[in-house]
Length: 251
Image (cartoon, rainbow, N blue to C red):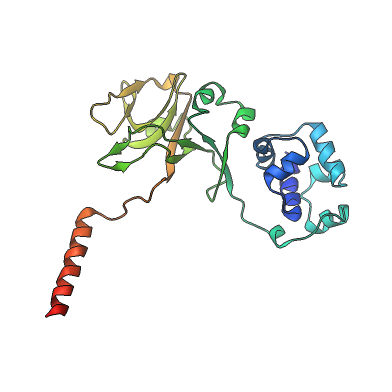
């Protein structure tokens, strides 16, 4: 594994270049550059040569060792140190499946180039695990005005196939089959994997483990609205307490 990804990320920091700005310099897609930086994809030799020549860095240096700030400043006087170059926490780059890309994902879910071109979310979550983001498109997990609404974004952690049967019943998952992406609650039965919506009038979907391409366990959610954090009974008690206080103070 080369140090190319770490080094170009450090160069961007010193030059204060966004991923898009850096990608444009060398005719790359932003998602492709992100894949290079995260080590999910390796560049063509032509790309390595272009970048190395542009910043006056030897190919050996950019590939075989993690470059220091001092080294980078010596390679090219045009590189300038900025506050942004200081060591920063590395956030995870999570590909996001949208309504427009959902159908293509069914066909290219295991294609690294396709995944790299999906919109990327930068999130402060574990960079050592595989995550996928998915844009909710229905009301199947909505009940009594709670749950997931269209345009909410769920973040799923990849579940190894040998762990699927060990998940707790009721775990919210994104299941990937040949025909569809299914965001529902999972129940493991002797007949197979049952995917259940929160609406009683929506029939369960039962799939065989062999037909399951991927399974992502939902870990995080981004709501397009502010969710209700407190219980309705607590709200009533708080209101009653406030009213009693006002009565006492009025006496």
